[in-house]
Length: 119
Length: 108
Image 1 (tube, rainbow over the protein chains, first blue to last red):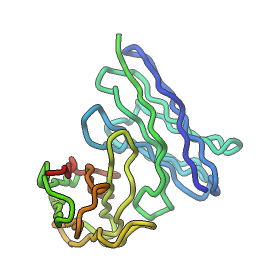
Image 2: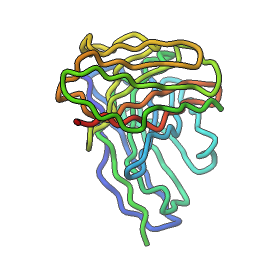
Image 3: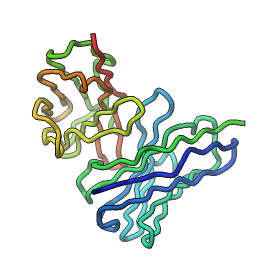
Image 4: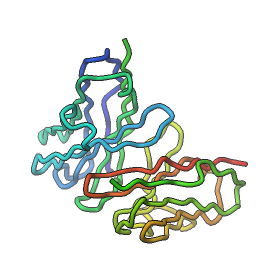
């Protein structure tokens, strides 16, 4: 069965970087896009960007351009999201979510990773 | 950038009642690009409806999506206890994906 499992919670200081992983199993890793969506405490959902694992092509939301990097490792079926220059406002749960190419919706989601930015 | 506005912010209903949730876009959108998710506390969102009206795999037929242009609706015909959650609409556009702010469906 399809599974998307994320790495554990992180605590970072302002100005640092964080790298969250998302390991996929139960399907052909390179046949689906992977997106990252975050949710600040008590707030709504915010799309950060996506990666096409097959072509290694990324597309980032303008808000995060220059601060986010999404990569993949096809040997382990894992995608990564690295966010730099962290601020307290980046405290959130970060989700990865799978998309069938061009389906325009996210059918499987990881369990979420809480990133806390605090001095 | 298209802005999605969901209403009401909170909807208080009882099990067995009918729920009507609205998602309004700031300009007309392609229905194919409109999606609904359900999120329960402490859980990841769950895909409910895509293409404005197609139920995702395993979604009960009491969930119904409709609408076009700027106005979209998620209707839950007879509320079950497990339906009380937050619902988000989502749109795909030229600059990527945007979400509405959510509607919280709570037990009255």
